[in-house]
Structures are given as C-alpha cells and as structure tokens.
Image 1 (spheres, rainbow, N blue to C red):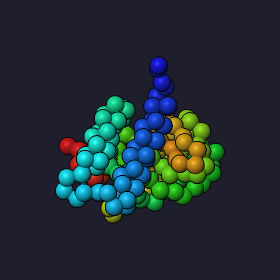
Image 2: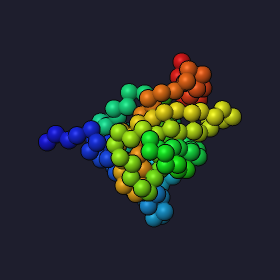
Image 3: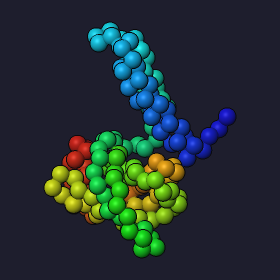
Image 4: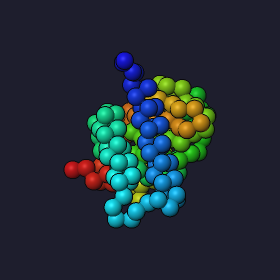
Length: 152
C-alpha cells in the first residue's frame, strides 16, 4: 500500500500522540517500575522506529511552545502557538484548518530576537494545526534560527 506525504505526516502525528498518551496512562496506572520498566522501554523503542520511518523533514527540529502572530495571504490576522521548529519550517497549533498552499507571514520570538518569516502551509490537520515551510527568511533571522537550533 502506498500512502501520500500528507497521509504519512498525519499518521506520524497520530502515532506519536498515541505513544505519549499510552506512556502517561501507563505511568499513572501504578504498574510502572521506575528503573527497569519493560513497557516504557517498548514505548520508547516503537517511538524511535516510527519517527525514523516517517521523518522526512531533512532538518533537525526542536519542540517548543512560543506565541506567534500571523497574517494570511488574504489579510486575515491570527494569533496561535508554534509548537515545533526546524530551520525549514514548523508546526502551528490551530483549531481552524489552513488550506494547503496558503502563504502566511509569521512573527515569533526566539529568546530575545523577533523573527519574521514568510511561510507556506504544507499540510493541515483539522482541530490540531498546520505544518508550514519557511519560504522567505532574512539572513540574520536564519542565523538566529540556526543558532537556536544549534546548527553549525
């Protein structure tokens, strides 16, 4: 069976979310053994396999939660959070879906530096958010982003 890139991204998101929920549920159940837990080991191993299987970003990423202001190509303004960042893009939380291909102007802070980037929506998951690819970023902002992500 062949799946599209969009389906792969969605499947990866779902499997990662389920693994986090399973891990939290397991720890809360009272069956967790602190130093030698086979369930935790199996969850971590499966997360690694799934991540390797679906990782197609080609750039190191960093989980974070930072406010972002945006403006769509039609002038609509919004505020949300950026919850995943890499040199080439990120993930925006959003209950409302973004149309794939929509161009967004985003403004967010990394440490004390405000970055402004033009991005394009690559995929959108209704009630969850959207993956964006940076299509235009100033060289100084790119250096700040690389330094934040510890990319040489």
